[in-house]
Amino acid sequence: MTSGTARRASDAVADWVGEHEGELIAFRRDLHAHPEIGYGEHRTTEVLLARLRDFGLQPSRLPGGTGVVCDLGSGPRTVALRADIDALPIEDGLDTPYRSQHAGVSHACGHDVHTAALLGTAGALMAAGPFDGRVRLLFQPAEELMPGGAEEVVRIGLLDDVHSVFALHCDPRLSTGRIGLRPGAITAACDLLEVHLRGPGGHTARPHLTADLVYALGKVIVDLPGLLSRRIDSRAGLSLVWGTATAGVAANAIPEAATAKATVRMLDRDVWDDAERVIRELVQSTVAPTGAEVSVEYVRGVPPVVNDPAAVEVQRRAVLATLGPDGVAGTEQSMGGEDFGWMVAERPGALARLGVRDPQDTGPLHDLHQGTFDADERAVAIGARFLAQTALVALEI
Image 1: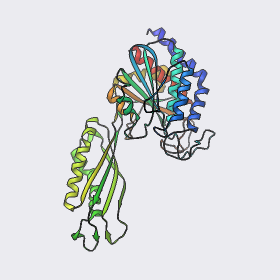
Image 2: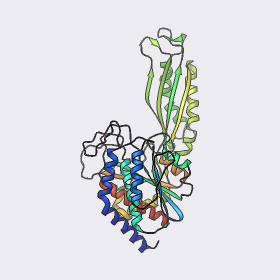
Image 3: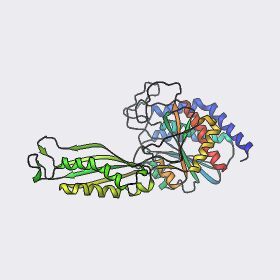
Image 4: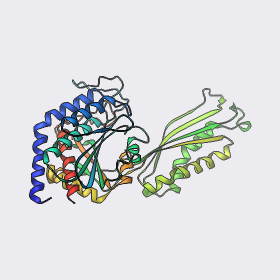
């Protein structure tokens, strides 16, 4: 693509999005009012199929029944753009006309913004005219579940012929009009750990005649994070945090069962591959002197999202074309999980953070996964333009 052709394509993207911004915002509000939990996104899938067909495209439903894939253009190189379409089991705390109509379910993570932006990308790329290559739009279900819908996308081969893959995620800490970029690990792997202890129970006056499960559970809770810090390279950023612990009902009775549950997070893919083995060994060795029976349930969730530096450079150029130099922002690593990690483990790619906080908003921050989270809707158009430019730049290289 020559520089003149690239400019014309960029202008066509900006013009189309500007003309249709109101429609994209209305689409986002419709999604927000009708959120659906992972693998239950049937209405969302239907409206996406209908809108993409209105563009003259030929989208397909993913084999699992929810989610959509749609290709634009043709050529030797394929670039994939991904949006997640599911919601969270969180009550919507907004007081807006587009408040969730489904009790206990809301788009508290901004996936409605991601989906509307990628839909806008489809229209913008159609307006940009012929380009040398193929763009694959992936509207992916079940990001909020483990191991996440992205694993399924990879498993069924939708990235087999893809050169690179890109995504964005709302960031309420970043002002609208800015996009956060970071090479290397940007989000963490996230696994689930459960430790179950059993024993004969007994009287607290005679702990020496039984297995004191509360003591044993306390040893695991207190010692395991520290032991891991001596077995795992600290540069991996491993974090084990307990979320629940249960044992017993009476002050003078040693219980027969005890359980603790935690999340395990890390920024290093190689450490993620070895973490389960190390944790199982340490739990067993910690509990052994207490005489308790122990079983460990370990669920591998999602790998870390490790952004390819060359892919981040594609995103930087896309931000410059969309927002100019002031639009480029750095961004911190997050210990949160994101199933886009499955995709960048398969193909080079990068996740960017889309600023969604109104710069004039001086109120308290409403973070992701809170029912009061909402986005400055100007970010929808920015996201659409940015993703379209990302695809055009990636195909040009």
